[in-house]
Length: 556
View 1 (tube, rainbow, N blue to C red):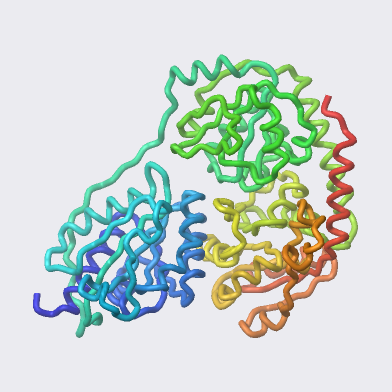
View 2 (view 1 turned 180 degrees about the vertical axis):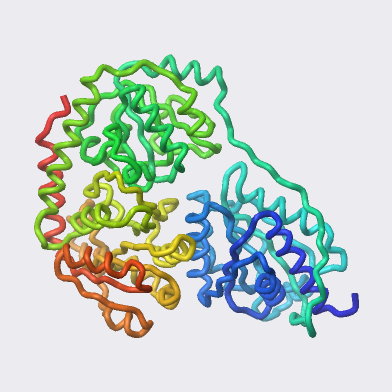
């Protein structure tokens, strides 16, 4: 083929078509010259929805939100050089949270490396151990029939045996823009890649069943287990009389009002009830109290179940690590029901904590716990909600309780960073429709570029402005003389001015009820910021009163 521009475009088109045939439906791309063939091929493909986002870091977190919401791979496209390095925070989050992403980085061809060419760096294995695989493609060549099969394997690697990002580096030569209308694309066959669910070993199930005797608990961390696994966990909890300590992100607290699901697991965990065995699913708990609770029973039977070879056991308290599909494991395992007094004691503590939370959140002075408790109980069924990290997610754990109204709760708990939270929420809103994001003022500040995307998405942001890093009020750093300067780090910015600059609706709310009402009123009204000023000292006082009140009730 004599036309190098046509050669590069046909190469990119065959690659993108292979991804589409393997199930890819969404592409997030950032403008750039070297990536022109990839972007053009994606834009012209009838089965691909392409979102253009200028800032590569925001684009990567937006793709992360899409992939989380739809539980399927999303592709990223960007030009060479520092552009793709901006993907790194989202890539490491996707690795830890097991979210499938396809990283398609444009690159200079080999002859432009190591010679001082502009915008050229070594992109090989740029993301190191944080991708499931790295593939360095050759420069475009006439033979393109193998790219469909290659793309099918890349998509499969992003999903199995452990979901996560896969990096494909694509060197492209100039000229980069083909002339004239593209001819009809050739269609190439690709293998059907099928993956299955890992059933538990019957022998192991029998051994474990014999251990589930006496007072037991089930602990579900922040990973979304999915509907089938959630139902299986609830069924097992009922059969064994085992209360469930479920993180708010697991989905269990906002899918059913079943009494087996504790409304305030953190408060009950602080009482350290002495269990005989624990079944653990879905990652490491968000709140330290639950982890301390498990660590305090070192030596008791603790069984960690994961559908991949990555087990959440940072304190090394697990006695058994079992790789199996959680739903299938729960369906097969047996055991002996605990005496009714065990669950009754924990439920009594849980009920007392619910009363203490209601009392703490009763008046109209806003703080994080009251805002989250009221909001999550008022949102319509199936509303997508993104909870930012630090004090926001912990306040939801402490105060939000449990509800029969099913909500779709999301968060970035892979590495728990506060960068990219708004962009991720916008990806969720793009995939699922009108959504709510609850962010602290520093998480909001970390992702201001994402405001450029908000006018096109139906996302309402509840901005909890406590003038800095309020999470540190709850940590040992609060006693340091340098606390305000080095940890709280209050920032001076005007959310109203920012909203105006980006063409967004701004609503200042002075009370808890006003804030919740504003969020509900704007759910389908496009991008908006509901801004609530919070007194940090008042917030800390309410939290301390709540914890003290919870400690008064015995679990026996």
